[in-house]
Length: 150
Image (tube, rainbow, N blue to C red; front, top):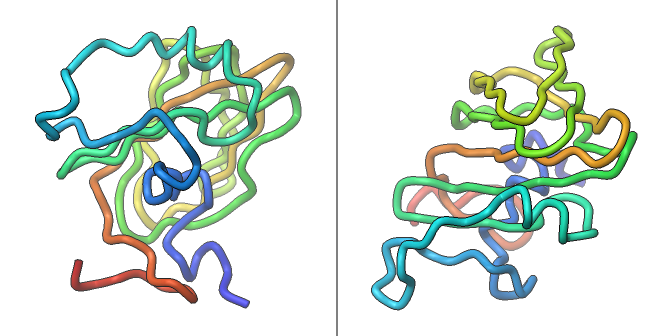
């Protein structure tokens, strides 16, 4: 069985690849069908009860996911070898561990996870939501791996 590392990261980061199937409110901001409108991330994070990616947006250049977790939940340790990732705290606070270094990420704070670093996240007390923003990556190939020639 392929590990998350073999596939280029963790499932919450893949949410943008399955927006239609998941019925998510994301889309391509470059599309002429979508007006560019502000998104109230705090309201989204508070109103969605799900765990993991609760909203996604994809452009030609970026993948943006709003991830939310209840107390004690989060993303297991994994390594993304393809892109640097910007994490931005949106609601509450949680622990982010990057290559064994533990830090707290709170709403209004940001940190960069370098590609190749092992990372995990875990909500503290209450609900924790954060944005994961990174350069667009190639899509997944059914059966594992990434399509290197999109």
